[in-house]
Image (cartoon, rainbow, N blue to C red):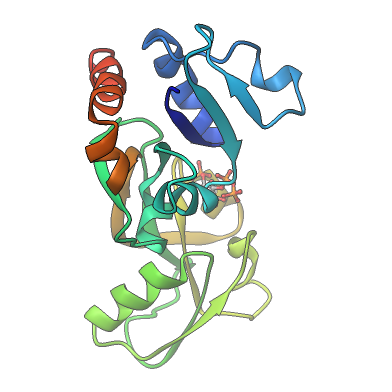
Length: 207
Ligand code: PRP
C-alpha cells in the first residue's frame, strides 16, 4: 500500500496543490467538486486525506497518516514527539505576530492576550518575562481588543490588511511561518523509500 498523506484544508491546500500535482501526487478528482475527505492519487498508489490543520499533526503522530502538509503555526501549537519536520515548502508564507490597537503602548504591565495560538503566545510572553493572561479564541481575534476582551492579540499576519481594517498595528514577530512536510517517526524508518520519494518529488518542484 502507498502513503497516506494528510493535507491542511483551506489556504494551505490551495497554495500547495499545484506543487503536489506537479510532484505526481494529484488527487484523482478535484477536491472542490466533492464532499469526500479521502481521495486516491491519480495513479491510484496513494491516499490523500483533507482535514483541519490542527488535526494533521495528530493523524501523523498516531500513524493514521504517514506524512502531512501543514503550517508551521499549527506545528508550534502541537510540538509532538511522534513526527519529524522534514521539509519547508516555503509556501503560505506569513508571520505570527503580536498586534494591539494603533498607538496603544502595551510594553508595560500585565496583559490580556486573545489568541488561537495559546502555546506560542504563552512561550513568547514568558520568554519576555511578561505576566499575561491568555484568552483562547478560535477566530476573529482582531475584534477582541475593540470589544475590550483583550489588550492585544497574537495572530497570523500576511498582507496586514485584516489588522489595518480593525485599527490594529502589528508589533513583534513570534515566528516566521510557512508550510512544512511532517513525517510519522515509524514511517520514516519502515516506509523510508516511499517517504523519501515523496519528499524528493516535492523538493524537485521547489525553486
Ligand atoms: C488569517 C489570520 C488573519 C488573516 C491575516 O486568517 O487569522 O485573520 O489571515 O491576513 P492578512 O494579513 O492578509 O489580512 P485566515 O484567512 O487564514 O482564516 P482563519 O481565521 O481561519 O485562520
